[in-house]
Image (cartoon, rainbow, N blue to C red):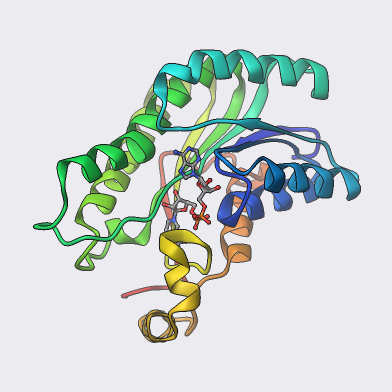
Amino acid sequence: MNGKIALVTGASRGLGKNTALKLANRGVGIIATYNRNAAEADTLVKDIAAAGGKASALQLDVSQADTFAAFAQQVSQVLGTTFGRDRFDFLVNNAGIGFRASFMETTTAQFDELVNIQLKGPFFLTQALLPLIADGGRIVNISTGLTRFALPGFAAYATMKGGIEVLTRYLAKELGARRIAVNTLAPGAIETDFGGGAVRDNEQLNQFVASVTALGRVGLPDDIGGAITSLLSDESGWVNAQRIEASGGMFL
Ligand code: NAD
């Protein structure tokens, strides 16, 4: 994967940041998008450069689909100026928000926000960026273990992620002609800022997750950045249209 270029959404922290760092370690150039925290994105770019890699950061709110055409133009410019290329190789649709409410409590406004960020965003962002993805490239969409097992409080969130898993298969079918492989990576519960950092900071929740996980602990960002990197590696090129769960074996 040395010399390839990846665009990772929501890369200023959490799983996106870990993925960007791991890919950069393998010689992959990084276009990192951030929503609000330019300083964190800047630090990521500098850290990658300090380790001998190449990266650039662009602002992107994935809930604003009407900005995606202009964003694609920015990506095109960065590809030329920073990387001397006109296409990139890997798209990681990672940006997302945690949301917890029972089915009965979920409002239409909350549902709409989730649709915009978790489903409409990746759908139309991928559409806008597709002309810039090289033939033979890869797309990884981030889902969740919550599409396989059901926990009260995640009906709306998991519904969106279920949609992403279906979209993955449809994209794999339609993009096969361009040799673009598309897969879903579904993390279990991971210690990040996600959902207010509950898995990391709430001791009771942390222990509960560990107790229902075959490998006996909650997940860490390294577990997911590593799984995404291996999915994008040359060795995984024949893996297509799959949902790969990286949860340490939750709720088996
Ligand atoms: P996080 O909260 O640490 O990071 C989320 C990232 O998404 C941040 O960089 C944030 O800026 C970005 N983001 C949020 N809303 C955005 C918007 N409107 N536009 C652009 N960027 C936006 O959480 P994380 O754990 O790193 O989550 C990353 C992905 O992993 C999400 O899609 C999430 O649903 C998924 N996931 C997380 C867990 C977990 O337990 N942490 C489990 C399963 C799936």
